[in-house]
Amino acid sequence: MLAGLRALETTGAARLRAISSLYESEADGIAGAPRFINAVAEVEPLLPPVDLLDRLKAIEADMGRTGGHQQSREIDLDLVSYDTRTGVFGPLILPHPRFHQRAYVLIPLREIAPEFVCPRTGTTVGELVAALGPGSRVERVSGRAIG
Image 1 (cartoon, rainbow, N blue to C red):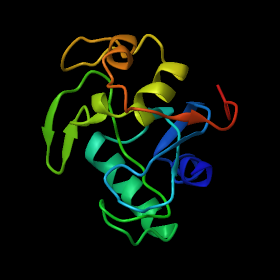
Image 2 (image 1 turned 90 degrees about the horizontal axis):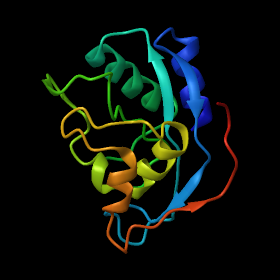
Image 3 (image 1 turned 90 degrees about the vertical axis):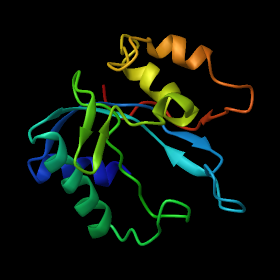
């Protein structure tokens, strides 16, 4: 995961600003899969949104990702938000259409960007975390990498 984020810098796609602690969670929608390790990174993008998404997918492929969305996978890099942009940009929907339902995104996001406000709804990350259901659990497994 950290290697994938570092690849963003080395390929000129983005500059890393902060990386959250690592969090462990159940595999979302993948029965019987091992638990996933998750983190959120804040970056300064150096590419437009769709080009950044293309770079993320290329990094995943370079790191051996073969599984689809409903399979275990080596790495999964998502673009959750890009400044205040909202809408559909080719294959990309901003902000990510389900980020607000995922504790494994919201908890690390709140850690590194407690001031984050969803550009679509105006809801703060704190409010989004408070709205998570009781089954939404993540467990912190390491301290912050940078930030």
